[in-house]
Structure formats: structure tokens, C-alpha cells
Image 1 (tube, rainbow, N blue to C red):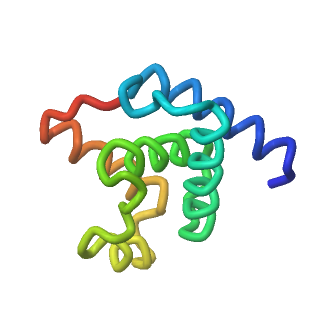
Image 2: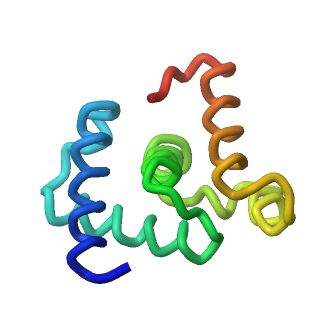
Image 3: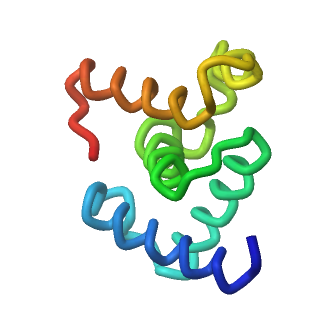
Length: 105
């Protein structure tokens, strides 16, 4: 992903997160954008590829774990499994949060 595309996607995710999680996104835009870019980098390292899944990944990191999703017991091992796809796994994480009554996008 080139720098221009990365910046555009980070800004787009920022708008999404501000709508979904206004209380969690009350820091300066520059700080939020840097957090999102670090989430995007992590997502790429784990093979999360679609824009939608990267936005969900950012949502999960911001909402659930304050950036520590990968520290949750079993998450890294699950993400290393070949099936289902990474995008499907992120969707399953989101489904679990919805079932738990957290709302979400």
C-alpha cells in the first residue's frame, strides 16, 4: 500500500471510528491517525486485507483491548491458522462482540 493510499484509508477509518466510538476517539486527530496506522500495520502483518476488515480490526483494537488484541489469550494462535480467511476471522470476532451485547458497527 503506498503512502497516499495508507493515509486516505487511515482517515476514512478515523471517520468511521469517530462515529462508532466517540468516547474512545476524543484525542487529537494526529494521535488517532497514528494509532490507526499502527493498527493497519498489525492487520497487514496478520494478512487482514480488505478495507472493511481493516476498519473492523481497528474497531476491535480500539474498543476491546486498547490496542492489545494480540495479547488476548489465543488470538495470535487463531490468526495463524490457515482457515477460515483472516477477513472471516475478523468478522467472527465482530459477531462475538455483537452477541455479547457490545453493539458495534
